[in-house]
Image (tube, rainbow, N blue to C red; front, top):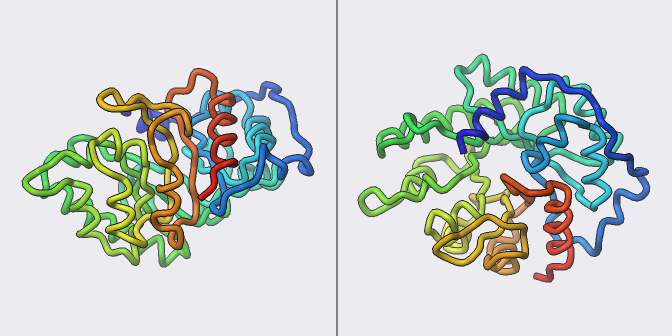
Length: 284
């Protein structure tokens, strides 16, 4: 997963050309593949990062054509906030959330918050912690304190702050996990968790247990499926063993956004289409 960290860092420094993926008329973007569930179906754009490099606008249009209503960014591919906002407007998409790297200082954080507001995000999400920052319980206590601070600054700017988990948070130290430490030491009014259901499962924990025991802490979910234990290979939503109806029903009042993601899809648009097709038919 170091590639995600490198990806977030590199996107801010790169600009890319455009290759045609085709355009979808705005009137067709709302139809999708079927009825939508109560929570809007979004997609994390890390899934289609290679396509975004080649054709930023066309990839957004293709996702809207599949039926997605929301996207979550992971870098902006050299675009300015104004250009990102315009691309979203043209495709009829909204981007309630963005993934960002942990800021070096408060000045960098303020620049991130300013850009997020300019684009129209509601959430700023820390997507990764480097290993030296998370090697002991004391490290996680410091991370929690830092998150509370960042969350307070985000709130002051009219935004909300969240952390996105992987599987390393579920290593047991003593009688609990680092994930438990993070939940217990962060202020729910300042720090939310964007639960990646796959990585909780891959880490050997039960996402349903957390959703039921920490109501209100998980207003956003990442949706990718897992094959059976012990391999727990990442697959498209609906192609694995996770009970998605139960996941969506566990804390329905809290859940605001749900983003499909696949870290290494063989065909990014085909993967996005398969997950959307399953979720759009899901009854819960």
